[in-house]
Image (tube, rainbow, N blue to C red):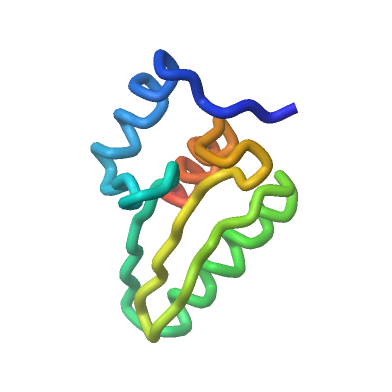
Length: 96
């Protein structure tokens, strides 16, 4: 079962994500990042690759796409906040 990140785990898990451009969402226990690409096709291709991992891990982002920009919010609805799954998916998104 997925658990909400503990106070001790948050610093260790979220610190590297903040260094790579992720930030906390105001008034929510969630993280956000905007990805920019050279074109709509590149952005949509990235979203397709990301969707395959999200489906494999059964952990789906909140996201939107406008032309070459993809805005991503990660949180775990089952625990009403951030979990290790969010950090795992954030790291994967950064690597795609």
